[in-house]
Length: 103
Image (cartoon, rainbow, N blue to C red; front, side, top):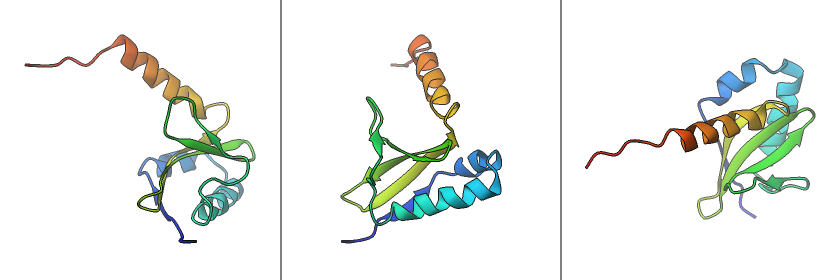
């Protein structure tokens, strides 16, 4: 079985600033394991999205998988109480503020 390439979004640096170093080490071990198996036991597909979630203690790792290219994109890392809140806020904002189109 081929290994997947792990890519991190630039925003991951900001996400990690709020996480203790001991937890960061555990999180990176979990991310490295995605190269072998991008859908490990306990993973969950997020509803209505092409994203997956794995747990590491109180933290969640959100990522996408591109099987045809053998790539795993880590999109977001955060505490379980905060990780989904940002996505919900952006979705509500987008629904209430449609983009203006010009002809």
